[in-house]
Amino acid sequence: MEWKRVKAELLAEGRVALSGEECGPYLSRSTAGPTAGGEGSVFFSVGGRRVRLSVDPRATLVLDHEGGGKAVIRRPGREPLRGVLEIPGLHCPRQAYITLSERCIFSCRYCSVPRLHGRVKCPDEVVEKVKGVLDRVDVISLTSGVADSVEREEKEVLNVVRKVAPLGKPVGVSVYPTERTPDLLHDLGVEEVKWNLEAATPALFARMCPGLDYDHMWRALRRSVDLFREGAVCSNVIVGLGETDEEMARCITDLTEAGVIPVLRPLSPAAELSGWPRPPSGRLLRLLEIHEQALRDAGLDTRKVRTMCTACTGCDLTPGRDT
Image (cartoon, rainbow, N blue to C red):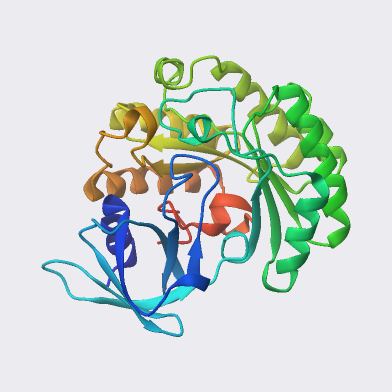
């Protein structure tokens, strides 16, 4: 079995129907991004490498839980895939990955969060949640929507960082930054940051994320590389928003040459894009080769990242971890 090809096929499907034993302890529910508000997801692992799949009773793939975390994914026309389910810390395995504001004033076309009118967690609640899983996580990762304003969200994130830092775990942060956010987080001892470009081109970003600033995200990324180091800064770029392979390749190279590790996130159709297709496995594999070469040329290693999406790998094909 070549894991990267199997994972590309699973990501292209993106969903599983559950059967067999109850999966309660293994279910993770997202409060951020396109899959927020859904029926949850499971982390399926084979030989220590994982994929995250959304739960959907209508899915073509069926995951049969045999009990105790042992599971088999049954794929039409393919050999059954045997592995294990991982128990999430908070949101994903081995991390306390917490969304602070489960609502957002912006309306990115692919994101479900603005429609959900979710809650905002206070710093003390976050601390208690982290303490509850401290024995089974390695790091603390924080993300957030923008409940009222970018400036106020920054203030709340800084408050939370101050409170969780004494718990002794590395901290990573991914929010929509102000001009000063990288410096403020660096001063508090945050280990890694992730500012998301979301789209491969400025034109696509303007179409998909009205009201947000592509150039501002690039300034935050470059400033963060100066502060944190090359390879300690990541950026999600969604695959499947209408970009060409050439445009994605250019974006990947621009990021890696700047010292930033790209996270290529296959589109999860939701919100205004609910009728859009997921990117096919062949395309994910083509982009993986480009991604892998660009990281190699820039001397960047995903295996050194300790927090957030690059460390988890559940939703993406990650060079160095899945290859």
